[in-house]
Image 1 (spheres, rainbow over the protein chains, first blue to last red):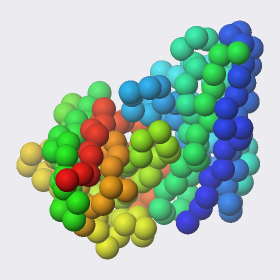
Image 2 (image 1 turned 30 degrees about the horizontal axis):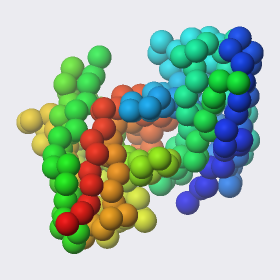
Image 3 (image 1 turned 180 degrees about the horizontal axis):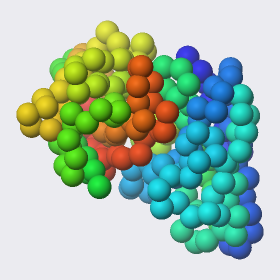
Image 4 (image 1 turned 45 degrees about the vertical axis):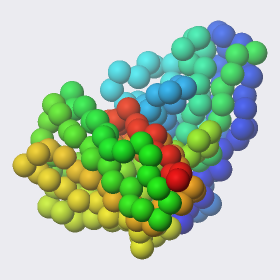
Length: 107
Length: 125
């Protein structure tokens, strides 16, 4: 199965600044990757699919980039509600797999 | 907007079978282009995809659990279900049902756009 490795495990950023979260796949997944946001006690929420397409209702401050094995989620001008755990996922090969998550915390 | 809701026992004894049902509302489970999945999250850790089913009954299971997992569908009730046999404490997790979007030919190409709230299942005697 494809292993998705996220870095860093924890990222401390001040509100109003930007954050870049990384995800690396153990083999190419083309552009078949997604990002999810999860807050405590809630289900994950789809942010980005197809590497760079924002899901319905997702603010423009969320953007995705990359291809092949390296992917980045960038959040510009961080708002208080953006501090959460973020997961990347590949759906290029079954079984679908997720990264272990990056916790974005307030600095 | 489609909504999903998991239901089932919150406590299962070791070696027994875990059974959960996901009820879909706001849309038909027979709609083409969607695969219906189960995903779990162990306490404090990441996400594990267990498998999916299409409304025709076609399934795919994660090989890591394939010998123990079964997903079925009841289109007349707009529900799909998960059974996980021979459970151990390692199966304690929050179980989510989710809808895979833009699916065809065995794959989904727009991620999981809709999720249930999740249900905690504890395996303990």
